[in-house]
Amino acid sequence: MKAVAECRANCCVGPRCDRRSTRQLALGSGARRSASLAGRLPSWSAALASDRGSTRRFGVQSDPIHHVYLANAVTVAYSAIEELGLEVCASSQNPSRMPDGTWNPVVKADLEQRLQNSSIDTSDTHIWTLRGPKTRIEKKRPPPLAGKPSWLRGNVRDVDVRLIDALALASRLRSGTTTTHRFSDTARSLTIYDAHNVQSLARHLSWASLAFGRREQSLHCKRNGPS
Image (tube, one colour):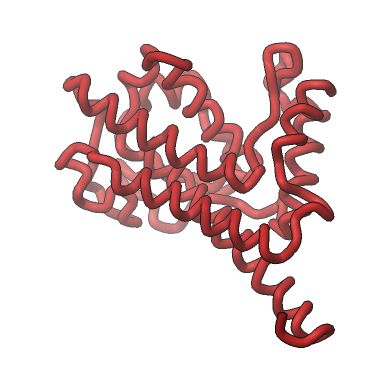
């Protein structure tokens, strides 16, 4: 509980987030996601890796510089989620998962509450892009299936995952690929799809939060007139 409380203290949620701060957070998150997208990614990622139904595949690369680019992209994109206060608040003393692999109910309830405070539907799902053979990252932590898109074929193995599970996957990518001062061995298994998944999740949450801020502003103007 202490770890969750400390994490929540850094999140802008509840009454403390007025309509302006909500919009600023969403815009700030968008700026961080843009920085992630603008990072110097390998040239083979120039084509949109997330084309629905495309059988074109970008696998794990051997060049260490590619690992650095992708790990940086994941880190910056996840910071956009942190900017919104929607990161998974867990620690070694209070992990997000129980020994049997299920959600820690305290961590889950806290995350769902923050999503609800941002008017984001906790039952919403997010497309998790998977292409080609399973990587070490996917084998170690398979995405929890919540549905299958209609465009699956060949190398295309995309899945629908619940929003909170997508956040857990993004958190795992962020913490699993970098430490405070260096990249971990997991970074060697990163693909363009891993970076894309965290970036697209940040975009999903940013747009949802920005839409919430606009609704709040509209209601405020109707009640009080333009500010």
